[in-house]
Structures are given as structure tokens and as C-alpha cells.
Image (cartoon, rainbow, N blue to C red):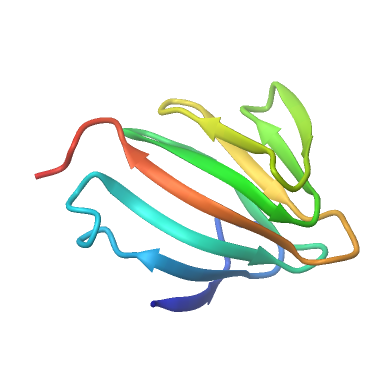
Length: 112
């Protein structure tokens, strides 16, 4: 399992990624499948998807999600949100405990 702490798209702090499978292991169907932890005050900054979409599934904590600069959503454990290609999003931990979620980035078409 590849583990890394990275700043994401200009969001404050770092995101802790625990990659469940690599893109190669997913045979070109998906780009990312990871468990992500954001400490309080940290975020994955706003970004737009092109050629792929991303689903966030909340495991613990509470997320504030910016949906394409059109609305702000609060996500709790058991909630998920899918951002399709050509739309953008960010996810922020405004709570007092760690935000833990699964991130799955799915290609629009299988990459060969």
C-alpha cells in the first residue's frame, strides 16, 4: 500500500493518502482508489475533473464540500458525493476530529 502526505490543489494542510490499489492494479479503469484523512482545518482544494470523475464516501468526521461553486454541502459518515467530468469540487474538514473518506477517481473511458 502506497502511503503519502501531500498538499492538494492549494488546500490548507496536507491530505494523508493510503492507496488501496494503484492505477495499474485497476487495469486502466480507475486512477485513484484511496483512504484519505484530513486533519481539522485541512482541505483538498478546488479542482475540476476532465476525463474522469471522483466519488467521496465519508467514513468518519464531517466534510464541507464545494460542488462546482454552485452549492456547499455537509457530508457525514455514510454519505457520498460524485463529481463527474467537467465539474469541480473541494472538500474541507471544518470539524474538530479527523475527516476520513474513500476517494475513487473513475475514468470516463477505459485507458489502454
